[in-house]
Image (cartoon, rainbow, N blue to C red; front, side):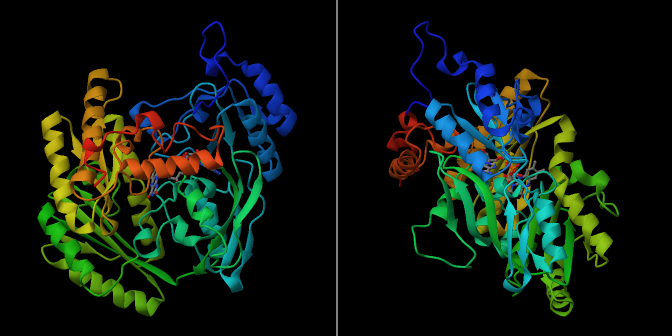
Length: 488
Ligand SMILES: Cc1cc2nc3c(=O)[nH]c(=O)nc-3n(C[C@H](O)[C@H](O)[C@H](O)COP(=O)(O)OP(=O)(O)OC[C@H]3O[C@@H](n4cnc5c(N)ncnc54)[C@H](O)[C@@H]3O)c2cc1C
């Protein structure tokens, strides 16, 4: 499927042959001149894959004010055959919002109309451009709670969370974004503005189109507003952090926590490399021989959360060097801020990192960690992992100095090899960050029949192929042979 018009007779790339200034003029007629950027500033051409050297290019960027302008931009792009790359906060780890030359960026920054909160029905509707931390804050003010808490919450946008079906530590008990979504306003690839789902907490009157859009990484439409099915705000959050001198002790503790009869809101792990990278900022300091940590959390009424935290602490205590149970609000917040910052601390260790968010069945976490270490040794690169132990999600990471081209190439090879762990251990290529552009080669090894079904959905909804092409779905031609073994 071609995303743009026929190639000009002079043989130039049809994508780059388009006149950026003319595109910007067309977009300005829709959103106003002051809301178009041409040339496109560097910060709109990258996402969190910038740490692995991924950068894009685009003709222009448009910042629509509302759903009607968004629909007009998308309709214009479909008519012109210009690819549209929806953009939230640009925190994605898969290159989904990093545009290819010849496309336009559709930035959702201005889709932030006032939220509508209905506390008595545990519901909230937010513009897609609302920063996720602001969603959390507004919910708390209304006595409500929104579960998904990605570490990027201060920068990502709720529309981006829906587009990636984002998770976070608290998704272990509370589910990823899809579990909290009752409706969304969406501009389909042809420019039609539709409402999927609605205010009611449940609806089965159509195919699950809302579920299709959630996690589609901008390939099936632009989300302009979301309606969230919320919960009453918990009274307290009580984390329990336990540190171990070796990985096996930590893995045994995770098993014990899973068996202790409490469903923690979060069950996180960090290996020795991640702990070393983030040790300097750990509130209260870490034991010198810390080689593994487990972080669990109980959330709810003061009485019940205290009982659950005590049970979790008991389960994690055996073989632990230290168990910490902060309960003052400031200390709890400081601990979670530290956890949210681990990713950036790991980047700082060498200036760059390549992370794969491989997911495996939870009981195979130990095998996955051992396989990552082996790959690090085989490729001669430093590796580390941390992530959501309860969900079996590992941020399997190669540390790299991005200014060293040879090291970057070696790191890319090692990171790519890590994707094989998912296939070997019965997991998946991505547990939360998505496929975007950087995992397309891995995704091409999936069951050909599944790939064909995905492609049929994409082609039905986006026959011109202008909605974030080259993301999430491998190109039809790259659909692989059965020898991949993933089709079984
Ligand atoms: C430090 C750090 C910690 C992170 N922690 C987590 C974590 O715990 N859990 C987790 O799941 N992820 C995590 N992430 C990854 C990232 O934050 C999430 O994927 C997030 O949901 C991306 O949102 P965004 O607004 O930044 O989207 P972007 O990066 O702008 O876009 C991501 C994808 O969504 C599409 N998109 C964005 N907005 C829209 C829209 N309105 N309509 C249609 N498509 C759209 C884009 O085209 C792109 O394909 C983390 C990232 C960082 C940098």
